[in-house]
Amino acid sequence: MKKKQLNQSGLLTLKPKIFVCNVDEKSVQSGNNYTKAFSSKFGSDNTLIISADIENQINELDISEKKNYMEMIGLKETGLHKLIQRGYKILELDTFFTSGPEETRAWTIPKNCAAPKAASEIHTDFEKGFIRAETISYEDFIANNGWINSKTNGKMRLEGKDYIVRDGDVLNFRFNT
Image (cartoon, rainbow, N blue to C red; front, top):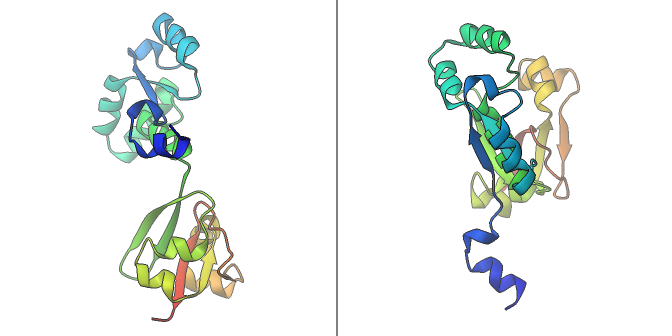
């Protein structure tokens, strides 16, 4: 059977995997004997160690309490955040943003996605009539409080059809239907 046919078969054994090991609070930093044995057998690249109990406690706290609690127990990021990051990495995905006066939205695209293809995530007509993408990095967008100051401070770029969208770009698509 050809590789393409195998990939189209939908077999779960061919799909990328992330293993999540649930441990007690004492073992969340470095794991335990079980997680070490598991990681040595299945690899540590796609194995996460979390404590569901800690995650539950974190989710019940408000933002400032979350930060203090996580510092107190020595966690830099939540298990959920780690899981999302690992999922995006293993599935080879990136995120770009659109932002206007009404709302800001995140859009998921494959890595190394050209601007017209990214535009099609919003609407297929955007890809067909793509002209240019007004582009600002996420960091510049936040530092300049949005589109207006980013444009004024020279942080906005006009990108064409060959532009490969970077993770975190804030985009405004120019298109003609």
